[in-house]
Length: 137
Image 1: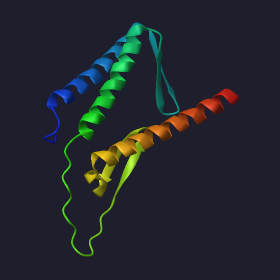
Image 2: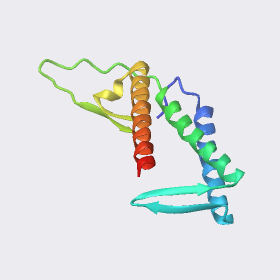
Image 3: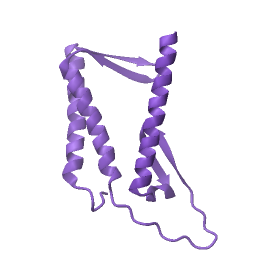
C-alpha cells in the first residue's frame, strides 16, 4: 500500500488532523456556532467561533497532508511495452489535487508537483472569476 519512502507516522498524523478537524466542525454545528446549508449539490458550512476556525484549518491541513503523504511514495519505472503496444492514462484535477490513472500513475515527483501547481493556478483563476462575477451582480 505505502511505498518504502513514506513514513507511516506522517500518514497517521495527517489522518488524525483530518478527523480532529471534522470532529471540531461537527461539534460547532451541534452547539449552534456554525451553520450548514446546501447550494445546488454543494454543502456549505459557515461559522463564527474559534472552534469552527480551528476545525476548518485542521481539516484542510489533514487533507493536504494525506495527499502529500501518498504523493511522495516511491514510484517504480513501468515495464517496457512490447512492439505495437499502446498505453493510456490521464489526470483528473479536483481543485488543486491531481488524480492520475492508467499509465500516468508512473509519473515522477516533478510531474506530480507540476500538476499540483497547474491545479492550484486553475483553482485560483476560477475563484477570481467567481469573485468578479459576484461583485458585479
